[in-house]
Length: 172
Image (cartoon, rainbow, N blue to C red; front, side, top):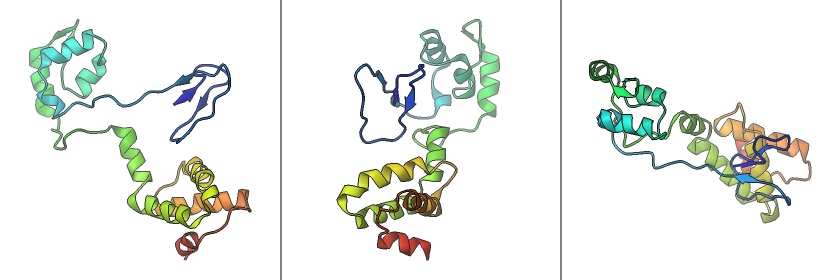
């Protein structure tokens, strides 16, 4: 979600539950597509070429994700067969992409468990604020240690935030 994309007033909202907009703001929301199913290497090369022609897939994605080599919009059958033979096959149902993999490395189960414990121990009126502030401070951090460090920064910046028992447990 981006407010006022491409302007001096652009704001990238990231992972938010709510957004406050002002009169005249323009909110752009992009979400994941269907993500497909099955191994991309199994998609018929001619269909991939049609997807490229329709603007659904870039020529680079056709090559890198589907293993389809196009020359002037047409499938190069020999090059496609060779490329597909050299590519590893995806075994999972579908892949969320590198951004999701990075996110999952940062937000481990232990990180979410600690954040949930911290928020549950806070008075209800602090929860949304603290959650938002912790998310802002997670850049370059990961796991429960990252959440603990981010929450500590929140407490230093906003000393009025209560320090719940969960944070004390994480610091031990």
